[in-house]
Image (tube, rainbow over all chains, first blue to last red):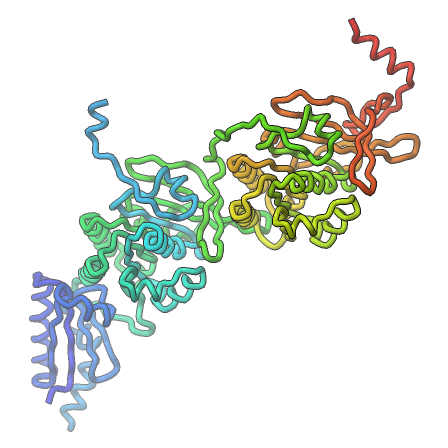
Length: 98
Length: 505
C-alpha cells in the first residue's frame, strides 16, 4: 500500500528530534495520507546506518522510494520546503488521478 | 617553583613524522586539537594521514580519519601510493574512515534547525570501535561549504572538538587557506576551533617550489619558531629538515687520518682529523676531483668504508679518472669498501637530495664521505635553500662522526671565492685552496692549507703537479706574491731574501 519510504535520522530524543518527528507525521498525513511508511533511526543507537547513508547533520529526512532519492535537513518546520524537497506535490497529484 | 609544578603540564604526543617532533619540542599537545592550514597542494591531507599512519606502525595507536572532501576510496588510493597500506589496517581494525564527503549531485534542502549531532555520534562510535587515540579531520573548509551557515558550523565544530578532548583523542584538523602569507584559513574561524595552529607552505621562489612548515602557536607549551623546509619522499611521506634547530654538540677527535696524499698530510700537521669537514676550493681543472678521489682511495685502501657523491661526473668518468691516476676503484667497490653515487643535481630539489644523502649515509655507514662538487648543487636551489642544505648536511655528517670532504668551484680562473665557500667556510674545519699560478707564460698549479682547526699547518703556497700516480706537492712558490688574490706578481730573488731578512730578529 505505502508508496513513500521515508527514513528520519535523529540524534537522541531531544526537542529538535521530537519536533522533526511530529512535523513529519503532520505533513505526511496532510499531503500523502496512508501512502507512507516512516522509519525513525536514532544515530546514537545505530551509527552504522548513519555511516551507510553518510548522515552528518540531524535531523535528516531521507526519501528512498520513489526515486529520485532526496534529502531534507532540519526539524522540518518549513513545511513548503519539505514538500518541495521531497517532491510530494507532483507525486501526490498523480496518485489522485489514478 | 612550587607554584609552577602545581600547574598541570601539557603532555605531548609524538607524531612520528620525521623531524616534526623535534621542531615541536616533543610532539603535538596530547588530547587537544591542532589545526593544519595551507594552500591547495600544500600536503595537508598527507600530514593528516601520516599522523595516523605513524601512530599505527610506530606506536601501535589506532586512528580515525574523518573526510569531508575526498571519498575514502580516493584517499586510500592516494595515500597507499606513498606506501601506507590503509586497506590492511582497516581490515585489522587499526584505521577507520568516517565518510562525510558530499554525495555528488545530491544537494540537501534545509528545512528548519539542525546540528551536526550525527557526525559527532559517528565519530564517537568509530573511536570506540577501534579504541582510537588519534583522529584526523580533512578538511574543515568542505563542511563549511556544504552547509553555508558559518556560525552554526563553527559552534558545532567547537562542540565536536571539546567532545574529542573528553574522549582523550588527539586531533588534527586541516583547513584550506588562500594566500601563503595572510589570513590563517579561508573562513576566518577555523583557527578558533583548535588549540594549536600549524601552517604548511608551498612557495614559488625563483621558479622553484619550496615546502615549509611553521608552528604558529601551541597553546600553553613550547615549540621551535619559524619555517622549516620539508619534503615528501616515497615510502616515508613528509620529512622535515630541522636546520636551525641543530645543536653544535658533536664530539671532537684527535685521531688523524690520511688525506691519501702524503705530502698534504705533512702540510696539515700529520693528516686530517677523523671527524672534520674539509673544503677544497679551486677553479675548474685545478684538481679538486683528484683530491676527492685520492681522499676516498686513501681511506678505502686502509679498510675504511668510503662514500663518494658525484654531481658533476658519471661513474664511468670517475672510474676512468681514478685508473688514470693509478687507483683501482673497481676492486675497492667489489671489496665493499667503496660506494659511488652519481646523480644529476637537477633530478631533485635540494631538500630531497639532502634526505636521500642522509639515507644513503645511514645505510652505508661510511668512515669517509666526499662530495664532488657542492657547487653543482647550487644551481638547483635558491641561495637560502642552498645555505640551509649545506648547514643541514654538515651538521649531519659531523653528528655521524665521519670525515667529510666537499669540493667547491670558484667562478674565476685566478683567485676569487665561490658562493659555496662564503656559506660554509665557517662551519668547515679545514680549507684547502687550489689555484692556478701564471708564471712566465705558463699555467702552474698551487695549493695551500688556508685553515686547519685545532692544528698547526704549513702556511706555504706550494706548487703541485699531477701525473699517472696522482698529485705531487713540491716546493713553495718563493718568488711570487698575490696568488690567492688572483694577481700573481713575480718578485726577484734579491727582494725575497731582503723581505725574509726583514722579519728576523
